[in-house]
Image (cartoon, rainbow, N blue to C red; front, side, top):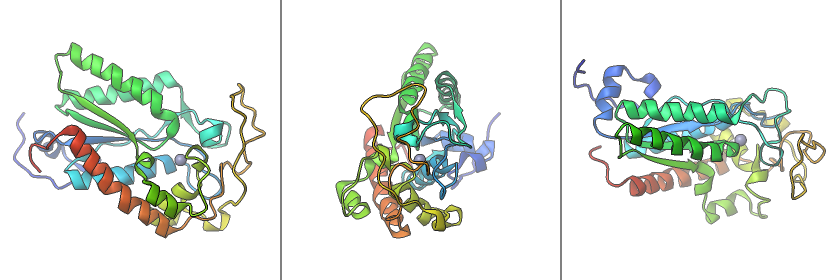
Length: 267
Ligand SMILES: [Zn+2]
């Protein structure tokens, strides 16, 4: 089958026809695969926060680099007490690691089968990170066995691009840690900026940061976890801070990816 020459300005693969997809892939674009979770995010943010945020950031970055964004991996690895409040909160729907690894590996292989050679695993849920590493490693092994040697995969968490300067604007009094930022100032601010309709501003929690021992217990000891599910105060969140984060990280991620993948063949 040959596709007619239809230039597509679209970014979301989900919105493209197969003609458009086939046409775009010829240019060897960067393809973003956002990965997130269905996880409690306190009384004020939706369960899909870890999907909404990386999808929005990935789409903005894709717009700058001529890339396209694949439908996201909506479910993620199990929420951990020290970074997500824990898997016991109602509405937190998680995957076993082997299922998550197999799913991401399968999607990368499918993209590669259709000629994609630049993949970005664009994570919004910290607990996914080592399983993304494993999925990337196994997919690269699969592709080498198929004779494909030019597939390149980049894994990133968008929050890792936040500079010290932006961090100071978010937390003028100093920040606890990125792990304790679960559903707190950064995520709440960016959600207020991008999706104010989904933020229950009246329910934003304000309590001291959680204090955990330097070890993990299984089953979880839920006592150190704040009952709100939020690991540090979200009170200082503002839409303006969210806009600051977007304005800084989007061009910085775009520049890093162009550098890491080398010059694009065309627009
Ligand atoms: Zn989150």
